Length: 110
Image (tube, rainbow, N blue to C red):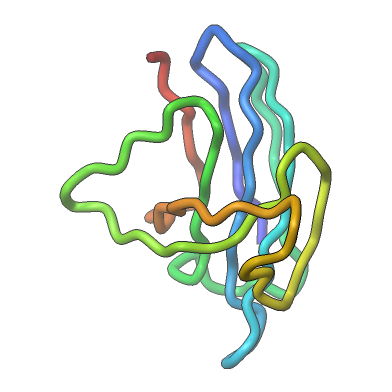
């Protein structure tokens, strides 16, 4: 699955994705770093449905009332790809991801 990401903010932003890869397994992967104004796709192998993809970014992600959210673990300050929960593991933090509604996402200016 291809997801087009654009960074409309004035800062560099890091993106992580949480996606279902089969009926019982979720993949959390990051960090994809987008410079201010940069636009580039992310390809998620094994993901077939946009409705099973959630996104988090570290540039003041604002969750709206209508957004469907999911909590998942990300590794702080390092690239990672995890298929098992990292509850309580050193170097990980739990953050709120927002469900994607389409195959593109724009990080807004803040």
